[in-house]
Length: 245
Image 1 (tube, rainbow, N blue to C red):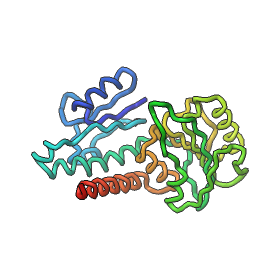
Image 2 (cartoon, rainbow, N blue to C red):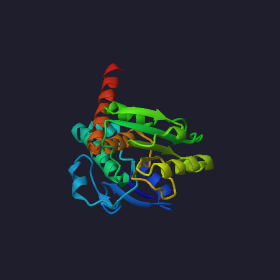
Image 3 (cartoon, rainbow, N blue to C red):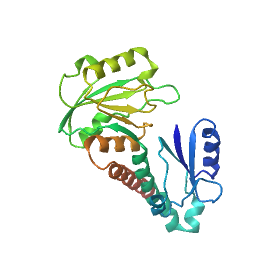
Image 4 (spheres, rainbow, N blue to C red):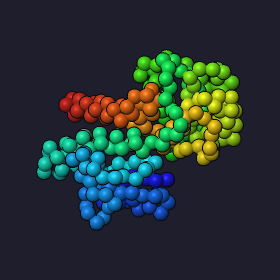
């Protein structure tokens, strides 16, 4: 997998880099020249627009801000933690792999979910696209039964780790044979086969940021804008929590 890693020279980032480098294509960002592939200071988010980043499949953000940063220069630390994070959201949007036409140009859509139970390490996840599409204004009909898929009409097939179980892969392939016009949302680790489908989104993750970007792509809206809204809401919630603590 091609991984973009920020904060690669920090305590946590350096450890993450050491783990990833033997197994993945790693491209590093940081503030220390000579120790990273790209020198970028997230307190100036425009720097990300000025460098040419390679196509990546995964973004790992380890560029943290600690108490000492806020004590030394509060405004720079604030910009790095907030505006820099927004710039990374745009990078996440551009790094998500999209093939074909993944936009649903309709006010109503069917969503079929085919998902394996999460492993012990991953734990339970509430990542589902249907509620997010509904919140975006679409009328959504949900199902987990492949036999219930209608013969016509907009369809999003959300698949998560179906490759772990033969019966789930068989169900997925059967649905896509019947509905090659569907949009496939491949959540988490991509299904390791080519699938006959009109459009495909590989999120390479199950976090809220990936969900916000995927929702933007499916609805035809600016995915980076959707990600930035999520981040701003998160920052607002953190600020409210800090004020009440």
